[in-house]
Length: 150
Image (cartoon, rainbow, N blue to C red; front, side, top):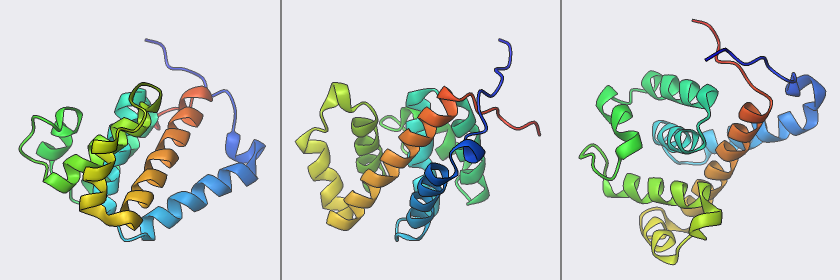
């Protein structure tokens, strides 16, 4: 498959919108949820959305934060992987439910499990984290953000 050409330098074209989304991401880094754990949430949403740029970035950032190769390899099949704790499973289920919200309608049982593990504040922050990565995925896919050469 041929590499896609970036359609727009969106940070320059719409700096206010770009800064707003970066601001949300900055808040999430400091919200109290484990940054390595958040990278797994971002990675899972990016897998569901088939965002190559974000999958590459969040896989790399998770590794830099010490997430094991085994855990990263299991993200796509987290339900079957023994590498995930119950709280992580609840958060990944919530992430999936929100990423595919048109089909799932954010089920009550998944919300309740997330709430049980993270409380109201953590659940709301996970909701914003999922919303943020879905927004980034749509920007990256729609405007064809290229994976940087390494």
